[in-house]
Image 1 (tube, one colour):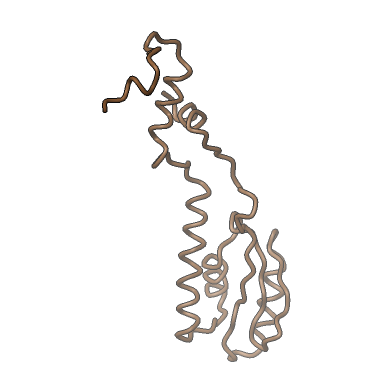
Image 2 (image 1 turned 90 degrees about the vertical axis):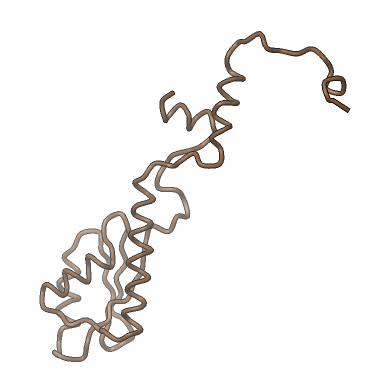
Length: 149
């Protein structure tokens, strides 16, 4: 049996992206105070990327970016900024936030491209397949007489 057939028989729907799945992310990129002027240069550089919306933040050394997780990830954006010579905030708090965001975005991207698996509904495939085929295994005995008491 093909995988697509098994999914249909089990009643699984495999359409992505799912509504409400939170594909649009809004993140704050924080920079170190030195060298001066890097926030303005980063803002101008990030504006050139298609599908990435950049806004100024209320904080002095930060910009806000909004993107689809299908197009970008925070890790890719920050790596590109580091490669371009920008100095990002590297405090313990920011390291923890980055690690969590990197993990969640990578997991979400992986889940969006991987097929749904039939973990707990695998028996439903065989039940539905059995019900759709004509067979002679029908017992006319009433259920109360079939049970052993």
